[in-house]
Image 1 (tube, helix red, strand yellow):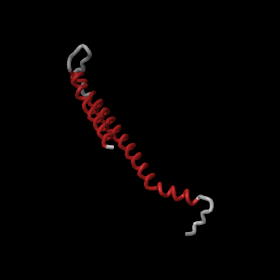
Image 2 (cartoon, helix red, strand yellow):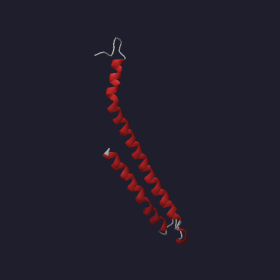
Image 3 (cartoon, helix red, strand yellow):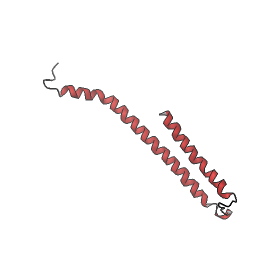
Image 4 (tube, one colour):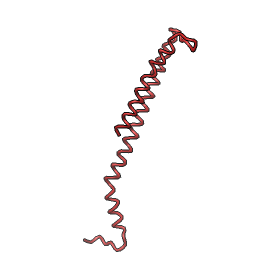
Length: 97
């Protein structure tokens, strides 16, 4: 479980590191491309969508992990009831002690 959380946090860090790198790459004059200063505010929405999608991905992954954990825990807790139900269904069981 801790390994999964570490992986998910690492993914989130990568998502947070991409926007500054892209901003540096785009705002540096080169033959690849250059965005004028008056157009750089467009990148704010890009940053917001990238960070938001990363946080959403992390939240969904944590929810899936937690749901899987609780499902297994519930099955473990109720497993003895399933064994008891098998005994009751056996032929010749009258329920008397």
